[in-house]
Length: 297
Length: 297
Image (tube, rainbow over all chains, first blue to last red):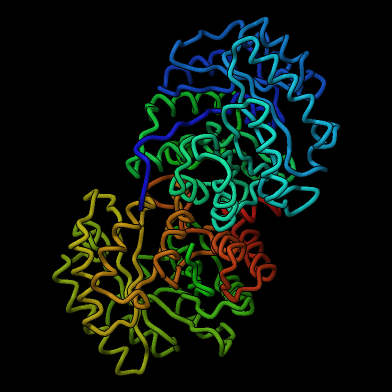
């Protein structure tokens, strides 16, 4: 079993986790939570989204959060940026990095962004150019890589096309999203084999959801293929809106625990991380689905 | 990725699942449930345990269950047998197969069986001989293969010794138990590598618990190594007594779903299986932890 010595966890709980929770979270709770996360050894936190507040009310306070969090110089604070207006708001309050996003399937892209895949490229190009001009790195998300809630199966050639376009635009990394948690290990193996024929492994990340319990098995395939960056959300935040009660993002602490047991370093101090998980679980007043939280409960 | 075309699921919910639940289940519910399971395409059900009722009150009705279930000729009905007295009770009411059990770690074996590992061998030998004399196949369980709640790490040489002794006694297969759900994929890889140097792959099965969410990742390692038999419990029954709230056995439906998505046939009709899962979830009046149940809930 060929494994890397080290992988990077990109914590997306404050953004992807919260945006799919049907809750309202006061700004000071988010700030305190992100501050706790910043002291765990994590070096990357996607702290919010600068989409129009109308679309994701729970993240409407992105600018406030950006202003109030205590910046740890060892942490990259990233935010999701949909367009130039979002980029301007984000740059005003300060971000280290921008994330742009689109889907590999047309219907999901239309429902999410209100544009076809082709129409989305120029919008993202503008954001990438603007961010790079402001000396910010840009990361790209591709959603529905392994399946779409509307279109079903997604052609790997569509995925390749979107990944290629994003890299051509200037993103430094593309995160491959299993948005609805349908990917299975064989599929992850096959899709990565296809993509790794065309793209360097260091420019790809995996963004897995655990809706059907396969996220850690899919992670295993990823690390064996040499993927070294994994997105996850503390607690397993992000209950999928398409499947009531189903878990959302893979839980960071379950991922960090598994990798650690396998001898793969994530630089995260596990006990501190669990404190941050318990903090937000208490604040949300809701049992989060991570296995590690269930063990300590 | 080298995968088998077919694997066998051994359903242990009515035994291993129930024995770790703090519930009382009426006999007629168990019978109805096992009858439902018998019509799902499964060909193996461990339906109860003939240990002394004092030790596992929830399974005290093993003989009644054996008498009342409708036997499907395509299903092997197995039961856990601790000693000659249990074997006699089981043979009187009818079993197709006996399972004997012990641990790879001394303290767990003592707490469970009240004997040292060395003292356990002759007891099991007697049961294996008696069952074979009655023309029954015998399966062997080894608990705590990947870690012990009392002794911590377990030496793979101890595992080898117990597996060797069980095979020498005459069991046709040894099921390797991650009793407390601590195994990680790297460890499963390494332990299987060691064992497969000495034992044929067709004589080994995996019995995984999902306490830390790693059971499907561990399963993936197993199928890639050529293991073709996996134990699981419908619903993920079997909340671990050492970790309140933690999930127990890997949920059969999550396992069957993943394998099916990977193109590995289990012969189980998924919809029928989910009906059996929903039946016992309703009967227990308790949310079971399987992901598939959460999706349909």
